[in-house]
Image 1 (cartoon, rainbow, N blue to C red):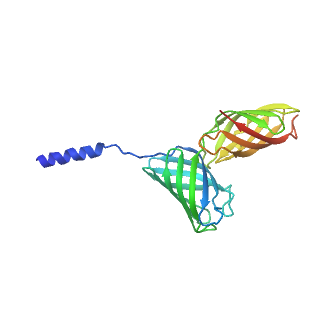
Image 2: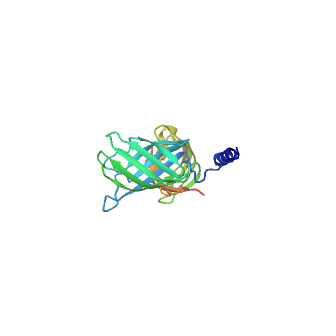
Amino acid sequence: MKHIFAISILLMSAMTLPVYGTASIVAGNWYLQASSQLSATGASQIPQIGGSLMQNGSIVSGVLHISDSDCYDWATGLPVSGTINGTTVSLTSHGVAGEAITINGTVTSNLITGTYNIQAGCADGDYGTITATLLSPATGNWTGTVAGGANAAAMLSQALPNASGYSLLSGTLTFSGANCTASGTLANDQSWVLGNVIQAVVSLNNGGVMALNGFITDVSNAANRMTVNFFISEGTCAGQTGSVTFSRP
């Protein structure tokens, strides 16, 4: 009887022991960079990846887009799924041509470091190291300097990624150029962040339209700098073009 009682105590103690080292992936816009060990130059067929990752229990899912690759179309989102166990994550994405990208790594809430390998398809046999960083949302107040001396300011709000992996942007932007000043509202369905890529279309109050596209240049978790090219069509600022470097506190 004493033995049974002792075993019961041990089992109850084991059931109540805390689990250490368990990580979770924060849902949001993720940016991945890969370096190939197959290529002498380190050039990977998945050099830059952007999109969504999220976690539900031990299941990880998302949609990723690969840029600067000979084998993948940046516009095509690749569903990714996998599991997390403690601080270890394993992800697999199956491409449209039957290729499989597998990522294994160690995870904190906003960083994954590990390895990748590709089987089948155009990039078959490519493997190397990979780092994934959760980029903080672009939500907040941004100030910018336009090449040539003009100024710009933006107040942005970034949503969680949609079903295609894009994080939509909303907000306002003000442009103060040498020959004109205008402000306007972002077109939500045409303004987004995907990894380190950013695009926006702004309907200006003078009848013009400003198109912006560029990159988040601070690809740390803070994501506090970005550089975009712009062009204004129609309105009193029509023809204005240039580059803006934005930052936030």
